[in-house]
Amino acid sequence: MRAIDVFYLPFVERIMPRQMFRYAVCGGVNFLILDPLYYFLIYNFVVAHRFFDLGIVVLSPHIAAMLLVFPVTFFNGFWLNKHVAFRLSPLRTHTQLIRYGLSVAGSVLLTYAGLKFFVEVCGIWPTPAKIITTVLTTVYSFLAAKYFSFRHSSE
View 1 (tube, rainbow, N blue to C red):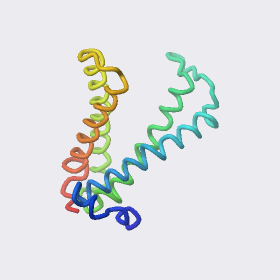
View 2 (view 1 turned 180 degrees about the horizontal axis):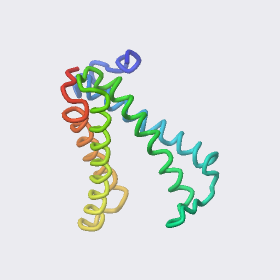
View 3 (view 1 turned 90 degrees about the horizontal axis):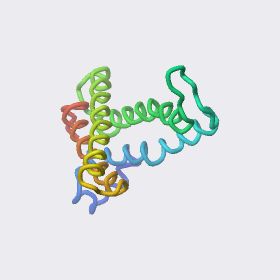
View 4 (view 1 turned 45 degrees about the horizontal axis):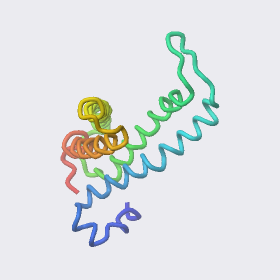
């Protein structure tokens, strides 16, 4: 935590509260560093570029790797949020985990709906649509974490 707070400089303090900064750092580490690293390792060494026939559906290697990485990054994200960004929440860990799972499910649905809306209804190209959707989902995700998953965390 102290390592993160070293980068909480006065100009950053004017832009966002410390808790939001910690949340952004946790999300950045999980999404920008750990997720691609785990995906690379699982895709190349666990899935090993093979298709997986599950009987009712065949998973392509990149989808199989994505599905295997998701639980790892889910629990990394939970741990980072619980112990760094929202460490003073009085809620029990079990309650936090269930609520975090619900908020992540909400993020997935919001991302899906946002992409469908911006691309198919508004006619926006997929990459800008993904950027807009990510911004909206990030705002939703922070508010869900602060006021639902890790409620009453007053840092």
